[in-house]
Amino acid sequence: MVKDIATGENGIDIKAQSAGVANGIQVSDNSEVTIKADRGNVNISAIGSEGTSNDAIYVNSSTISDSKYDLKTQVHVSGINNNVTATGAGTAVRAEYGKSFIDVTANGGNNIVKSDNTAVYSAYGANINLEAEQGINTISGKTGVYAVSGLVDLNAINNIVKSNNYGLYAHYANSNIDLNSVDENYIETDGESGYAICSDGENTIVTLNSTKGNNKIVSKYRGILAQDSSNVDLDADVFNKLYAGELAYYDAENGGGIYGNKKAIDARSGSTVTLDAGNANAISGAVYASGKGTTVDLTSTGQNTYSTNNDIRSAAAIANAGGLSDTVISALYAENSANISVSGERNVIRTYADYDKPEELERVVWAYDTADIKIDGASIIGTDTYEKSRNSNDIAIAAGTATKLTADEVNAPVTDRATVTLNYDNFTTNDGKQAVSEITGDILSLMRTGSAYGSESAF
Image (cartoon, rainbow, N blue to C red; front, side, top):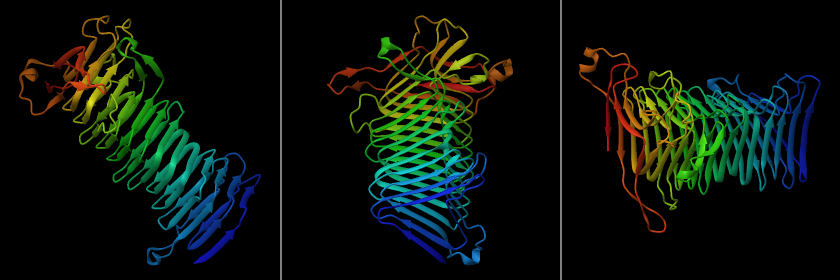
């Protein structure tokens, strides 16, 4: 193994600049590079022409055969603060193939990793680790963190990821992106069609864990997309906060809240999305689940005595919901045998629509086509202006499907049903007062919209 060690007491600057392609550190095949500044900062940059792959740190072990499994290709960067920058179509921190490893460690300060393209990229079994145990990991690029059957770990007081296309993207089987913070994991995507978190592929998981604080997800388009048997897991000691789409404050007469007009959670094709919060899961946007084996689980223990444990407020339209051509606005929507579970001492689930637009239908909670939705705890479920809307426009809870049914289809035996189960109770506020569960809107077990399926609502 070839080892190169560069040390500097007061700091190290590595800058590659070119009218063509520029690479700051490039290591391949059984080599190890260590960059260490004991009392200063490390700055690594690759500044090349637009459209070229300018990588600040690049490790590739593609030619190491399986017979040389003990060999690795590694880069270690350590300073009080570390700044890694790439321009053009390059990547700030990039590792490829299973024997590649990069770790960037801030000793008392922060890591700043930014790129005009992808900031952090790990592929084909490679491993990247960013540590700022006393500071902040800040990642920014068109895509923040991208794992293609690779592994990425971020550990800090705060992890901040800002992007245009994807914040965290775990792509294909066996990808793993893991963020651990003390105070907050913050993911923001500002692109019109961007995803804050995207996960797809078997044994693929994105995990956000905040031991004393929050996980906060902000996206103009989609908060979380999980598909193809993948997993997304958010665990926060205080809050999980998800904001999707354009945000607006509505429903002042009922205490008011922030409503999002896009999907905060979009789970498909056998995937699992889990939110577990010590205080509350606060979601502005719709929660959507589709496909057999797909599960969305929202749980709040209420251990920190917050007044509401699950707060879901949506102004988001679900395309083709229930097979309808109308605009259907929903907060919890499950179809095609998917499952949604909401559990907390107190749950608020509401939708907002313009009552002057009869084509806008509100279905606050809708289980469709053999799907199941279960809500446990004191619950306030309702549309925003039930008394002003047209008859049948505002449905609080709906279960079931079917359009254009024949008499034989209506009378045929049903082997599986779309089910909404609400196990509700009253609620004791922090000042000892009793608050009751409320449902504002119609309750409907229906035989319309879709193929012939039965339905059931249980309370």
